[in-house]
Length: 204
Ligand SMILES: [Zn+2]
Image (tube, rainbow, N blue to C red):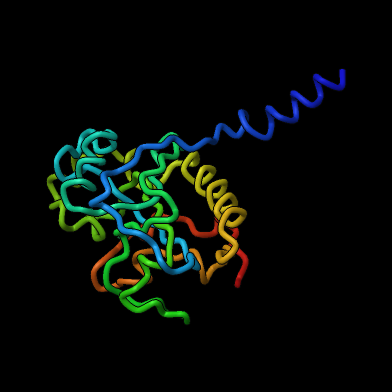
């Protein structure tokens, strides 16, 4: 009986939540050695809607975007909540670019070095995706816009895990930030369709 209970607890802690992390390392030209400590997590979205609006979340073409443009994030969360690790924590991923956080520490033009980047497979509002053009945006099915429940579950699990593993990072409304908060004139992700309330972040 006791073994059964322990097994049930183990199941509820691991399998039922369905979370694990699948390694999918990007080539090293997409990242650099890290020197500073991690204080922030930055959230993004990515898709292949420009090339294939009717099927924007195929994994291989999205990985190709990172490789081709020498971009990266530490994690990629698929629509079904699968989490892929693309870059190890001890390397800097190229996801934030130039910008400035609205609250100190501003990490002006230096957030890559101090953050973990998380990409979610998602598509924002028509205004955020203006680059796509109206025709491509209209070809995207409504179910492919915004974020899935499985992605929120995976993200919350991942933020808790990062907090446990990185002593210099404590999740809060000030330390988990959107690309749109850092570089509002350039970037619209994760954008208006992302529900920050679901993360239940402490005020910080
Ligand atoms: Zn971004």
